Image (tube, rainbow, N blue to C red; front, side, top):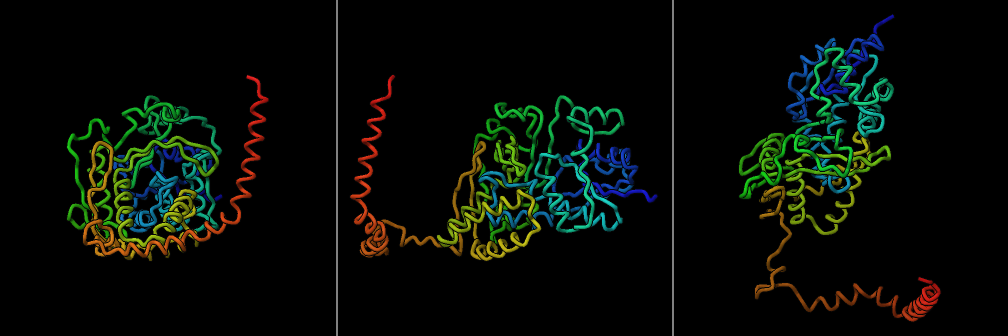
Length: 421
């Protein structure tokens, strides 16, 4: 019988470290690990050595940083996609790209199946499996965490200790951490209690706002077609803009998010995130759009932003709908060009200035000085036409509404008078 060959999406964390050994024990499988470099720093340290020590037959570590930024992060930034108005979706955006890399390696190595380390009640299982279904519908997917015998992270840690598997998680610090250049997600341990303030050791890349510098830091970001192209006057690739902003904003305590969010599988989950660069760029991008987008386009795009974020969060990246949304969004971004200046101070991001060659702000129309060119007299006719439907409705129906309102009030008074206290 031919030995199974399984490609595993491998982060080097607790769950995927256990998976490599577990698949060998349960399936007698030859395991190939696939790790994508999305700009994570701590998680990549010693990954190949760790994977081989755990029993992997072959190890792939792929540099996906530029593709991640250009093909996944920037489309979401242009869309203004923040899940439930807050979460920049670092993990959500990374999963379809990691699934793509996993499928490519599985095809190259002629694997019989692929495996991921997502839990049975999380969002990532959907993101991985929906992406794999779109890219390789014939490929078998294994999800060990949905079927194995371990009931807690403590049991997994004990399994690692028995088999000499090196992992960073400990019983004292049992956090599950997922990191890439767009942000860090931290969960498990005491963070599962929404009433517990995140301990200092939970945070990985930001200082406490109380410990941030006493003087504000100013940053300028130049955008072209809705994406950042320069930071503080220096032109650089997108990845390095985000990476440097993570350092600058993180040092000012910017980017900490503590959310109770609605997972795709129907439960509420308390999540702690750090996304200093993402928070600053979303803020700056929105401020530039305020200056350059026509009102109806801006309002409609804001509605689409929530749908786009939900679609990405729910793992539907490789869908015709997302591609169609991108076509609309990319068209709106043709005029989103210019410079935004922001102030970072003790966890806060504030606008300090913005300018654009496509600015729709006309000082002569907005001013209240003698240079005012707005036609004030035109407003009278505009208001009459604008309010005409409302005026007509109430001219005809006002008395009827008033009569019904009086009857309702009389009934309420009678009910209240009968209530004994």
